[in-house]
Amino acid sequence: MKSSVLRLSLLVFVPLLLSLFFLVFMPKDAAMKSYEVFGVKIEKNPPQSKLTQLGVATWSKWEGGPTKIPWSFKEEETMYLLEGKVRVTVEGSVGSFEIGAGDLVVFPKGMNITWEVIEAVKKHYNLKK
Ligand SMILES: *[C@@H]1O[C@H](CO)[C@@H](O)[C@H](O)[C@H]1NC(C)=O
Image (spheres, rainbow, N blue to C red):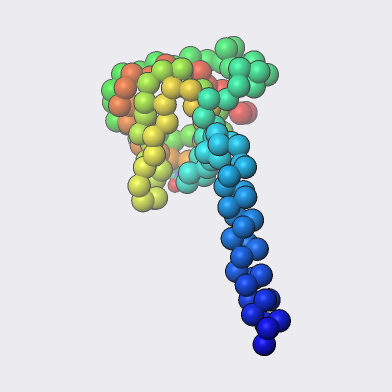
């Protein structure tokens, strides 16, 4: 009897303690720095060293004011937003998400979206051939 109570409390408390430990000691901004929504990869404020390594400054540039257009990615596209804010709705999915200044974003080849510029955008982009 006593040992089963002990086993049960271990089953409950050990995972609880581990999750608390994880929450307390996990680096705060590593948590939501990179994530994926509807197959789109987003990295918030990547370090300058990564942007340099990718050669972002040498990529093509695109600028655009408020608009709402359907867009189809013929190739995988990686973009880095210097300014602005865009609401992206992936075709066939419920809901949308926003990307903006400081985000490094990868759209997979063949994806169809609605690209709604909320605040004028300046971006660098690179197509994977
Ligand atoms: C995206 O749109 C194109 C043409 O507009 C279509 O041929 C293609 O099947 C669509 N892709 C997806 C994943 O829905």
